[in-house]
Each structure stands twice: as C-alpha cells, then as structure tokens.
Length: 448
Image (tube, rainbow, N blue to C red; front, side, top):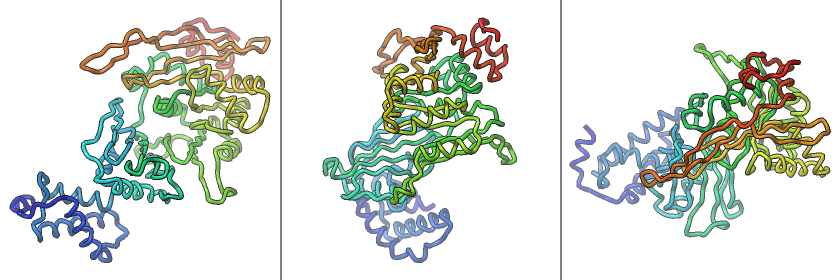
C-alpha cells in the first residue's frame, strides 16, 4: 500500500539531498530511539524514514519506497552499499581500490566490479571509519594503516590518506571467512585435489604426522586445513591459535546443542601496553600446558615458527600454514622465521624444521581462479642424517584454453611415489590400522 501511494509522489530529488534531510530529521528523534533491542531500533528508524518520505512526497528516480527506505537506512546506520556484500555466503573478499573502484571476489573464483560505488573520497572514508569502529580502531592522519575486524569472520585492512593519494579516498581489503563448512566432496568437485590425496592428508595427520600447507594469499590453505582438522576424532583435544580474528569454527554440536568434540579456539590480543600483548608465541607456550593432542598454528609469520617446530618435534600433531612459493621453499621460509627468535646456524634450523614437518602441501590459485594442491611432498631423513624431499602427488598442467573469452587451465593429478618405509612405521606405531596403511600404499606397506 505504501508503495502505491508513493508512486504518486511528485518531489523527485537526488538521493544525496534526501539523505541529508532524513539524517537531520532522524537525529532529532534519536533520544526516542534508544533501546537495547537492535532489531526494534532498526524497525523504529525505518518507520520514521518511511513517514518522513511520505509526508513530504520525497522520491528518487527508479527506486520504490521500500528500496529507498532500505538504502537510506544502510547509508545512515550500516555500511552503505557494502552492507549487502558483507554477510553473503558466496563472497570471499571485497577489495576497494578507490572510492569508485570496488571489486568483489566470489567463492567460485570470479572477480567482478560492483554496480555501486561511493559518492566521493570523503564518503568512502566515512563508511570505512564506521566499519573500523566495530573493532575500536581509528583511521586518521596519525594512523593511516589500520587492521581490524567487523566480526569473528570478517577481517579488514585499511590504507588511508598519507600512504595513498588523497583523491583515492581509501584503499581497503575485506576478507570474509565463508561460514559454510566444506566437505571432502566439495574439494573433489572443485578439483582442488583428488580423493586419494585428501585421504592421505587426513589420515596422515590423524595418526600423528605434522604438516604445513603452503602457498600465496587466497590459495586455499586455511580452508583445506580447516577440513583436515574437522576429520579428527571427536575425542581428540584440538587447540587452535589464530592471529587477531577467528576463522576456524570446529565445534560440533548435536541436535540438542550439546558439544560433541574437544576444541579450544584462541586468538591473539594486541594492547597499547606491550606487556599486555598476547602473541602467538604466548598462546603456543600456553597451549602446551593444556594437554592437546593436536595443535593448529593458523599461520606462521614470525618467531612463532620456532615454537611450532618445537611442539611438532615433541610428539604433538601440528598443522600450520605459511607463505611460500613451493614445497621445498617452505622449509627455507621456516628457517628464516625461526631465526627471528634465535640466531642459530641455518643448517641446524633446516634439520629441525624438516624433522618437525615431514609433510608439505603446496596450494596455488591458478590464472582461471581455480585452486589446486599442486604438490605434496615428504621429507625423508636418511640414515646418514641427510634430507631427501620426495614428491608424493602433483598436479600436472596439460593445457591452457580460452573458452567463451575466459581462460581455462586443464590438468590432472598424479601419484608420483609412495610414502617412505620410515613414515609407514611411524603411522603403524601411532595406531593406523594395517588395512588403511595398505590402502594408502597400494598394498606395499612394511611390517614392524
């Protein structure tokens, strides 16, 4: 009914003009809108906006009354046009390159520009400041680089004026963690890996092998690691460590809402007082005292790498991720990070990290935005102490085709070699049933 009456409105105005009027009107009503019920307050605000528009017959061309009310509300109380992207389940990233250039990365790999953009550099800054306010962060001339979060699944990195050109307004990367929990069939469907590779990673970690998932940003490392951890038995105690923002949600509940597994999720905490900082190193040290069966260090970026390899070498099953360009390069990257804690001989550190993480899986996002496990390796320690890094599985690119104007990368997965006798013995000692080991090795498992 409201929309029918609204269609007779004659006062067609620019959206920005109406927004300014409505903001002034609502500010005068603010005292009447204070309530602890967020949904109730939203209803009240939208009701006042509707009344104001209808009382003064205000309209914007090509927008119905309901559409205009919603747009005004999101601009005033939420995050402008970004609101509708922030809480979708099919979006991974929102990248704001400037106030008028916004690209969205979807879960299927597509990167598309938004139909909308901010009205000015100042408008972009105002909206992003509103976002940062959720995490108590401030963007100003003294702090032109800010990292914050909107919720436990949304991370924000902001570059403001002073490090970017003023006419850009603001540059922002919003990383959204998909709440959908992927299962094995999802990875196979998207050709991230084949069934045998996924079974290997899951079973090897289940029976005590520590591993590192490596690759560039957005290569699928964290998503894959989350699935591997989700396959662990419910009676095993898992301790996860994340930097600032929670991406994992491994807690399983039954129909009654009762927790079925054994999870401790932790995140770092920064403080203005350095003595009050809770770093990944601190959380890792603490984790070793709470009797975990498995420890997950979400990402190694600094000195926590040294403590992660120490934990792995003391019998805990450790999973982690790191930024590196290949399986072999992963170990050298670990050495570099470990040296931030102790300036030890590089050969000694190399021997430590290769012992700690015998399995490395290299993930990559290819030109067609598909994600693949490009290689899985095992580091075999020979009797003389030398290291032999063997490829177990790899993805072979066979062709690059252009289909309907878009590149499509063709390829297949190959099993290159079987795990070493040494790893087979460790898996048996750690409780892997012989029939599972036979499946993993093709029936060539060793006997102990």
